Length: 435
Image 1 (cartoon, rainbow, N blue to C red):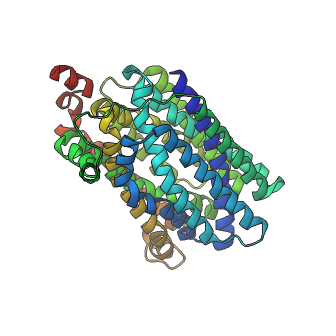
Image 2 (image 1 turned 180 degrees about the vertical axis):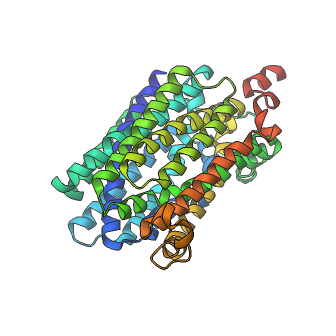
Image 3 (image 1 turned 90 degrees about the vertical axis):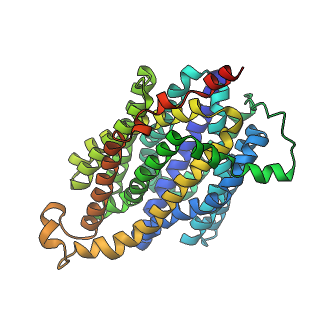
């Protein structure tokens, strides 16, 4: 796992820098506008272009050098950060600039993340798939421990300028880590000619592969139904906390750190333990655990409730995500993983984009007025959620968490999903039978 660990460490450092910048942007945008829609639109515009290019991205990842594609993604992110930095230095920075640069970076991140995920099965042995996936969660959540604390402190000391300079340096480290490793390429099918007709034909291959394997289709649909309410609630998390604490960034940073500790703990447990023997149990139990924790989080009004609930919520995602990734890596042959993962990513991105697009208006125009003084739901739910901006957002957050819990619970009652690993053999088993 040497090469994988080198790339992983580079991405960990880069993620810390990116999360520091993202944390600072959220505070800056909320202080200027006070609207949840402003923050959710940043996420929406980051996803929109990648949705458009996702179908072709799978073909490109399966046909072109994956190491090069990963380096291009990091390079574009660095250049976009430099542009934002220059706009800030000339006092020309506006909210819409984050929409535009987010769209550009999101587009190239699609190629980078897809190239990376499709390379994992070629970089490590099959028995380490779950551990590798848990390390990815360790990277993401570990950065949440460090980044918010650093950003919260450095924001008042060195401001946006210093934080962005740190972000740029971390991207350079990520690019450097890629220079010193060899990332294997899949063996291309020998029966296909590299022509335009085949490229267009390949665009639908990923989706056809999923639809012909009903268990994978069921897994994808359950994931979409889980991540749609998750992303609605997640996009409203910062506005909810800031509005309930009078813009207390220390509390927001502490919660991000709690999420980081929970995710890191979960990732370490999964990496050491290896996860359930039947991976689908990890997927569904992780969904249910996250849903229950987020219900408690949304009902809370103080850090004494939020911090442990946030820890427990994040603890479940490495269990869910590492098991889900291990299933896809084991069931899909490496030479088509780029296209299959692109089709999967497309549907999940569409769900996320819909969630980000509707979350802000739902919070600002429906749920917040309903739980403000004199609102239609004050008499029914005011005692449980309180009143004001944060109360309405909390109600929407709890509704989303309930949906997450139900999706995981109902997943156990679907035979084609529950018995996925018995119904669908691993790709190397299929290949050995063919030989």
